[in-house]
Length: 115
Image (cartoon, rainbow, N blue to C red; front, side, top):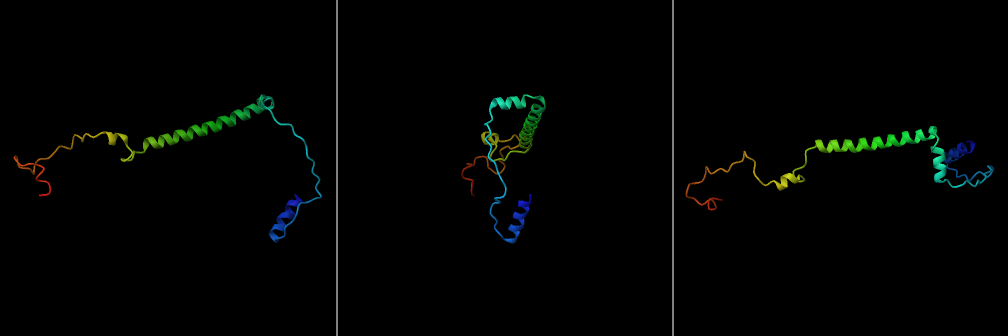
């Protein structure tokens, strides 16, 4: 802790300090963990319930996020350019009836365009 405080003070003063050689460190050989170690540790109820509760909480949050996105997407009206039903449905609505009020009875409709 004292070394950390000295390092912070030196950093603010602009002094670069090297490693503290007065601290003795010892390298310890730690065995590699295995599945048997995992089962032995989490097989105890006091450790297993923590793992189970944490896993369930993250699962529930993920499901909630996906469900919320689904609800938002289902309530948002689709864009006309992306709606497959509007692209494939080529029939006009029933309220849209062709109007012939400006045409004479014997006149060719193709000739009246632009005149």
